[in-house]
Image 1 (cartoon, rainbow, N blue to C red):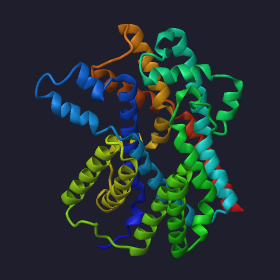
Image 2 (image 1 turned 180 degrees about the horizontal axis):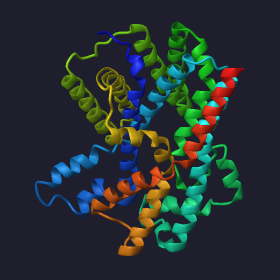
Image 3 (image 1 turned 30 degrees about the horizontal axis):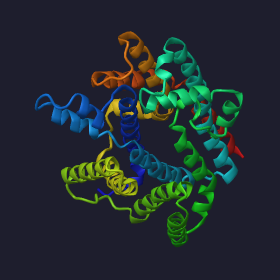
Length: 367
């Protein structure tokens, strides 16, 4: 029996959950593990098991291109939501502001409180000569004042985002997408394609990354158009196993490219992987795993708050063991676990925003 893949869109929460978890692992390593070349130089490979373990470590060394997956997913999901509703542009803006901003404000409060607390219990980790992260902690601490707090409310940073919660960079691009999306939607497919090409040319000339990241939101819109227009029930690759192998291969290419410093190449593979992964999930996954569903429910909360939680974890562990750099992997494993668990209980702000959105949608539907 044929079916429209778009009807299975809720299964894309799998993508949201997995990408959020990969970002958490990526940042946990940055904060709680001295890996990469430093690990090889200081520790090295002691036996054969160290090689596959290190390879697994490197497979999550791809935070930025994974965020590109978020951008593409956002373009896809927002297009579906906008076209299935009868909301005006103003109503769309109100819903998106409530959805994004209430959890964001909560995360700012948390980030500032944790920065104060960690500086109180362990000011030594704010010393710049230790490594890059500690230097950035010191910068964030020195920039913590009333005016930086006010600027952070509109996502303007000093040298660092407030509380060193540097995931806020992606919210800037997300909000720009929301602002211009009604225009994207108003333009027909040929017009959007022409706009996409124009943006590529503009980026090549200016190297402006505000333009660059909008390309990936637009790719999400194009992928939605592809599935909505084609209306096929078959996958890009007939075999489920082949689809998985292609996704894994593209994931490895993306990760290796990013580690090598080939950012645009990594982002390109991220976009291709997103297309194949969306197709795979929409075609084959009708009942996602319960743990994945639960993780996806608070994935935005996890994304916004995991850095402050990891900072607190780092401060407590470094105080307890009296060292600021860790070469043991289990510290960042612990950090990931703590972030996933704690952020589940920080969901209250996002839950409140969803409650308000439900009320707003009822109000808009009556008007």
